[in-house]
Image 1 (tube, rainbow, N blue to C red):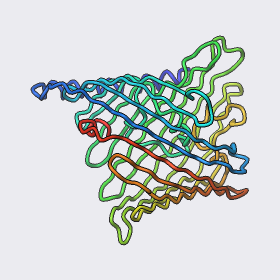
Image 2: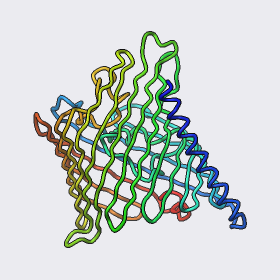
Image 3: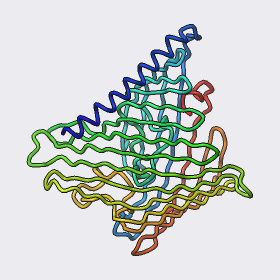
Image 4: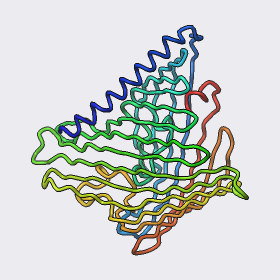
Length: 357
């Protein structure tokens, strides 16, 4: 418990530092325009993900559904207060798969920004790699509940957030995650990190269950270029992938470690991306706790996993974006193929372009 309390206190300290900086900037710029604007954000996100594969690491299934989110609020200066709802329809079922409310405060002065409340994932600077966040979480958990802080400059960014996943009760565990990622560099070369701390507690009463401690760390370096030779975009990233896992039933630390690489090439509307993991199988004790504890792609339970994505942007307009993708998954046992179609419709509402980057 001391381990998790320390993590929460560190995150609160970061929030306090950011709040002090915000207050300082706001005081210095109190003469800024305080005109109140009504802001509206609407997005429809549709997904088709055919995972009819034959792998010991995956459940063979097809995910087909749609998200509809709408938020309305007021903006005054660098401050915005929003409220709305997010509904998810899983095709082939009656009723809604999930509905959730969003209500949150946003601050953004161009360099420092933050959010507090229940807010959409899309306000994150970027999603973590799929070893941390599985594709299905983007489909079925589009709302985060907690707090977010971010700093951006010409050399990079750093972001941290706390997402409260489960409230402790007599039937469910208390679960929350604290996440940080960042990247700083110059002339296309950079160094960065992805870190995820997951607190997997017990229900009350615990009924003999124990807390599980999990920490994932991915320091990395890379190069990113635009308009290089005949390519429109090009990037290479390589890093260490280390996990620290402890089930307090036996108090034994399990420390899978390996190499994580990512190569991306873009030309016109075509993108080729290859991700590689080589090392100790990740997600210790997956057979006991499953995806409730391990929120990344289950393929990383293999000691060798190579994923190649071939994507084509059918539509790349300001309001409508649609792409199709074929994913080839190669493990030490066999080759699988899955296919995805994503259609995103987001009306350009002008003033929201600065809020939702």
